[in-house]
Image (cartoon, rainbow, N blue to C red; front, side, top):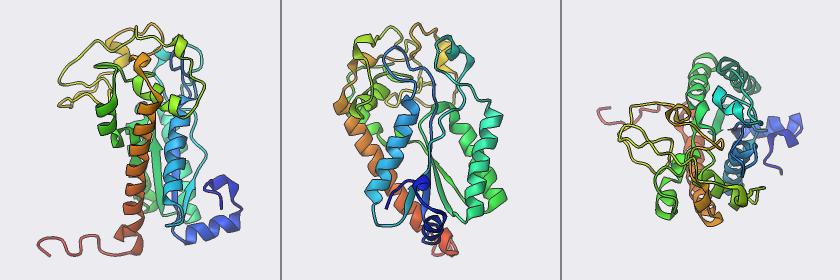
Length: 274
């Protein structure tokens, strides 16, 4: 039977929900990604993570993948280049909140938001906090980029500042996924040139002490609509990163599905000091 939520009839969904289905909501964005990548990049990547993790789980327990959120928030500066949608964060928050609340009202107890767009992270975390308070279900937000950090660090060729927006990382994933990538148009002119131990420039392989948020778009001016260096991208890097991220996401889904909370058990039972 299909892994896609929208392919099912309501009786089929009723059965899956009664069986404790985990529902995955891919959250992407439609925005420019330089001259070489399609504006669908974030949506394609979010959908690929969710679909492949559901396929890995297979018949272990039901996993249903929702249609992706395809439009969200991007900073105004990105509208210099056509293809970028700008949904206000307050609207995005309410929209995703209502999706989650609708699922809770259907009886869904296990819900995971699969985030592939860095601008959404804080909004999604706030949504799941409010849903927990209001609906007594406990969604999770996952960022698969973090799940493939080791593979990226091991195989990357682009060097510091290569990956933030439309750079080596995303371009490699899109090459592996056989998307319409025009490598002849790729340019490294927008490699991130600012480096600090307090700020990682959203590069998944850059070590920093953290604690600082400073929008990459305002640290240096982009010429091509990128922040990164995509020419070093390879399908092999994309394959390794997607493989590791999907394996880790599937491992988390198993843990999430089996958590005592869903069976009404005391999650602190057996803890030290009990």
